[in-house]
Image 1 (cartoon, rainbow, N blue to C red):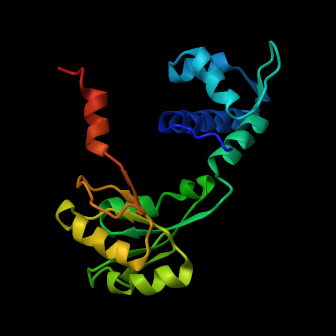
Image 2 (cartoon, rainbow, N blue to C red; image 1 turned 180 degrees about the vertical axis):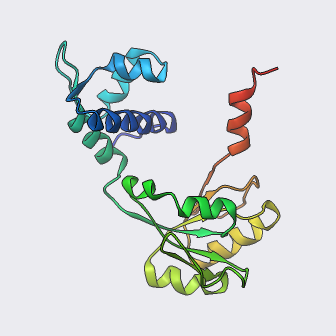
Length: 205
Protein backbone atom coordinates (compact mmCIF):
# COMPACT_ATOMS: atom_id res chain seq x y z
CA UNK A 1 0.00 0.00 0.00
CA UNK A 2 1.35 3.43 -0.97
CA UNK A 3 2.25 5.66 1.96
CA UNK A 4 0.12 8.75 2.43
CA UNK A 5 2.29 11.86 2.59
CA UNK A 6 1.02 14.79 4.64
CA UNK A 7 0.62 18.29 3.20
CA UNK A 8 3.39 19.62 5.46
CA UNK A 9 5.86 16.99 4.24
CA UNK A 10 4.92 17.66 0.61
CA UNK A 11 5.57 21.36 1.18
CA UNK A 12 9.00 20.67 2.68
CA UNK A 13 9.92 18.25 -0.12
CA UNK A 14 9.17 20.92 -2.72
CA UNK A 15 11.50 23.29 -0.85
CA UNK A 16 14.20 20.58 -0.77
CA UNK A 17 13.71 20.21 -4.53
CA UNK A 18 14.40 23.92 -5.07
CA UNK A 19 17.57 23.70 -2.97
CA UNK A 20 18.73 20.61 -4.88
CA UNK A 21 18.25 22.41 -8.20
CA UNK A 22 20.39 25.29 -6.91
CA UNK A 23 23.12 22.83 -5.90
CA UNK A 24 22.99 21.19 -9.34
CA UNK A 25 23.33 24.61 -10.96
CA UNK A 26 26.39 25.25 -8.76
CA UNK A 27 27.94 21.93 -9.82
CA UNK A 28 27.67 20.28 -6.39
CA UNK A 29 27.43 16.48 -6.37
CA UNK A 30 26.40 15.87 -2.77
CA UNK A 31 24.35 17.61 -0.11
CA UNK A 32 23.90 16.85 3.59
CA UNK A 33 20.72 16.97 5.65
CA UNK A 34 22.42 19.60 7.81
CA UNK A 35 22.94 21.87 4.80
CA UNK A 36 19.25 21.59 3.84
CA UNK A 37 18.16 22.13 7.44
CA UNK A 38 20.39 25.18 7.82
CA UNK A 39 19.02 26.84 4.68
CA UNK A 40 15.39 26.28 5.78
CA UNK A 41 16.06 26.87 9.49
CA UNK A 42 14.51 23.58 10.53
CA UNK A 43 15.77 20.59 12.50
CA UNK A 44 18.25 18.26 10.84
CA UNK A 45 16.36 15.18 12.08
CA UNK A 46 13.19 16.41 10.32
CA UNK A 47 15.02 16.58 7.00
CA UNK A 48 16.33 13.02 7.43
CA UNK A 49 12.86 11.79 8.40
CA UNK A 50 11.34 13.37 5.27
CA UNK A 51 14.01 11.94 3.00
CA UNK A 52 13.52 8.46 4.48
CA UNK A 53 10.03 8.51 2.95
CA UNK A 54 11.71 8.60 -0.46
CA UNK A 55 13.69 5.41 0.23
CA UNK A 56 16.80 7.37 -0.63
CA UNK A 57 19.86 6.66 1.51
CA UNK A 58 22.85 8.92 1.76
CA UNK A 59 26.52 8.14 2.31
CA UNK A 60 28.09 8.51 5.76
CA UNK A 61 30.06 11.77 6.06
CA UNK A 62 29.30 12.52 2.40
CA UNK A 63 25.56 13.12 2.19
CA UNK A 64 22.97 12.54 -0.50
CA UNK A 65 23.66 12.49 -4.22
CA UNK A 66 21.98 15.69 -5.37
CA UNK A 67 20.67 14.45 -8.73
CA UNK A 68 19.41 11.14 -7.33
CA UNK A 69 17.62 12.84 -4.43
CA UNK A 70 16.02 15.36 -6.80
CA UNK A 71 14.74 12.52 -9.02
CA UNK A 72 13.39 10.68 -5.97
CA UNK A 73 11.36 13.74 -4.96
CA UNK A 74 10.06 14.17 -8.50
CA UNK A 75 9.00 10.53 -8.69
CA UNK A 76 7.36 10.51 -5.26
CA UNK A 77 5.44 13.75 -5.80
CA UNK A 78 4.45 12.91 -9.37
CA UNK A 79 6.31 15.64 -11.26
CA UNK A 80 6.66 13.31 -14.23
CA UNK A 81 2.87 12.96 -14.60
CA UNK A 82 1.66 16.02 -16.51
CA UNK A 83 -1.48 17.66 -15.12
CA UNK A 84 -3.40 19.87 -17.56
CA UNK A 85 -5.14 22.99 -16.26
CA UNK A 86 -7.14 26.05 -17.28
CA UNK A 87 -6.91 29.47 -15.66
CA UNK A 88 -10.35 30.95 -15.02
CA UNK A 89 -9.98 34.72 -15.03
CA UNK A 90 -7.46 36.62 -17.17
CA UNK A 91 -6.94 39.49 -14.73
CA UNK A 92 -3.68 40.51 -13.05
CA UNK A 93 -3.24 37.29 -11.05
CA UNK A 94 -4.37 34.98 -13.85
CA UNK A 95 -1.98 36.73 -16.24
CA UNK A 96 0.91 36.43 -13.77
CA UNK A 97 0.30 32.69 -13.34
CA UNK A 98 0.07 32.20 -17.11
CA UNK A 99 3.44 33.92 -17.51
CA UNK A 100 5.14 31.71 -14.91
CA UNK A 101 7.01 29.13 -16.99
CA UNK A 102 8.37 27.16 -14.03
CA UNK A 103 5.06 25.33 -13.56
CA UNK A 104 6.04 22.92 -16.33
CA UNK A 105 9.00 21.72 -14.26
CA UNK A 106 6.53 20.41 -11.70
CA UNK A 107 4.22 18.66 -14.14
CA UNK A 108 1.63 21.43 -14.55
CA UNK A 109 0.67 22.37 -18.09
CA UNK A 110 -1.56 25.46 -18.28
CA UNK A 111 -3.39 24.98 -21.57
CA UNK A 112 -5.29 28.26 -21.84
CA UNK A 113 -7.22 30.94 -19.98
CA UNK A 114 -10.95 31.65 -19.89
CA UNK A 115 -12.70 34.96 -19.31
CA UNK A 116 -15.99 36.72 -20.08
CA UNK A 117 -14.41 40.05 -21.07
CA UNK A 118 -14.81 40.54 -24.82
CA UNK A 119 -11.79 42.86 -24.84
CA UNK A 120 -9.57 39.99 -23.64
CA UNK A 121 -11.07 37.03 -25.52
CA UNK A 122 -8.91 36.01 -28.49
CA UNK A 123 -5.70 37.51 -27.13
CA UNK A 124 -2.71 35.44 -26.00
CA UNK A 125 -0.64 35.44 -22.83
CA UNK A 126 2.66 33.55 -23.00
CA UNK A 127 1.37 31.57 -26.02
CA UNK A 128 -1.80 30.66 -24.12
CA UNK A 129 -5.03 31.82 -25.73
CA UNK A 130 -7.79 33.58 -23.77
CA UNK A 131 -11.09 31.88 -24.61
CA UNK A 132 -14.73 32.67 -23.93
CA UNK A 133 -15.85 31.11 -20.64
CA UNK A 134 -18.99 29.89 -22.44
CA UNK A 135 -16.81 27.53 -24.47
CA UNK A 136 -15.31 25.87 -21.39
CA UNK A 137 -17.50 22.70 -21.31
CA UNK A 138 -16.49 21.85 -24.88
CA UNK A 139 -12.78 22.36 -24.18
CA UNK A 140 -12.82 20.31 -20.96
CA UNK A 141 -14.26 17.38 -22.89
CA UNK A 142 -11.92 17.77 -25.88
CA UNK A 143 -8.66 18.23 -23.96
CA UNK A 144 -9.27 16.05 -20.90
CA UNK A 145 -8.50 18.83 -18.43
CA UNK A 146 -9.26 18.12 -14.76
CA UNK A 147 -7.87 21.23 -13.03
CA UNK A 148 -9.24 24.78 -12.96
CA UNK A 149 -7.18 27.59 -11.44
CA UNK A 150 -9.66 30.14 -10.13
CA UNK A 151 -8.41 33.75 -10.18
CA UNK A 152 -11.62 35.80 -10.35
CA UNK A 153 -13.24 38.29 -7.92
CA UNK A 154 -14.59 36.58 -4.79
CA UNK A 155 -18.20 37.59 -5.44
CA UNK A 156 -18.26 35.46 -8.61
CA UNK A 157 -16.35 32.50 -7.17
CA UNK A 158 -19.20 30.23 -6.04
CA UNK A 159 -21.27 30.74 -9.19
CA UNK A 160 -18.19 30.00 -11.30
CA UNK A 161 -17.33 26.96 -9.19
CA UNK A 162 -20.85 25.59 -9.78
CA UNK A 163 -20.31 26.09 -13.51
CA UNK A 164 -16.91 24.36 -13.38
CA UNK A 165 -18.37 21.35 -11.58
CA UNK A 166 -21.04 20.97 -14.26
CA UNK A 167 -18.36 20.94 -16.97
CA UNK A 168 -16.65 17.96 -15.32
CA UNK A 169 -13.78 19.71 -13.56
CA UNK A 170 -12.70 17.63 -10.54
CA UNK A 171 -9.94 19.80 -9.06
CA UNK A 172 -10.11 23.53 -8.30
CA UNK A 173 -7.06 25.52 -7.24
CA UNK A 174 -8.82 28.44 -5.59
CA UNK A 175 -6.93 31.75 -5.43
CA UNK A 176 -10.03 33.69 -4.36
CA UNK A 177 -10.79 34.42 -0.67
CA UNK A 178 -14.18 32.71 -1.03
CA UNK A 179 -14.92 29.38 0.66
CA UNK A 180 -16.43 27.18 -2.05
CA UNK A 181 -19.17 24.60 -1.68
CA UNK A 182 -18.61 21.67 -4.05
CA UNK A 183 -19.72 18.02 -4.29
CA UNK A 184 -17.75 15.37 -2.39
CA UNK A 185 -16.07 14.11 -5.57
CA UNK A 186 -14.56 17.54 -6.32
CA UNK A 187 -11.38 18.64 -4.53
CA UNK A 188 -10.61 22.28 -3.73
CA UNK A 189 -7.24 23.65 -2.63
CA UNK A 190 -7.56 27.14 -1.17
CA UNK A 191 -4.49 29.28 -1.81
CA UNK A 192 -4.88 31.64 1.14
CA UNK A 193 -2.48 34.44 0.15
CA UNK A 194 -3.63 36.89 2.83
CA UNK A 195 -3.66 34.20 5.51
CA UNK A 196 -0.07 33.31 4.68
CA UNK A 197 0.88 36.98 4.70
CA UNK A 198 -0.69 37.51 8.14
CA UNK A 199 1.08 34.43 9.55
CA UNK A 200 4.36 35.80 8.23
CA UNK A 201 3.85 39.34 9.57
CA UNK A 202 2.02 38.51 12.82
CA UNK A 203 4.99 39.49 14.98
CA UNK A 204 5.47 42.90 13.34
CA UNK A 205 4.10 45.66 15.57
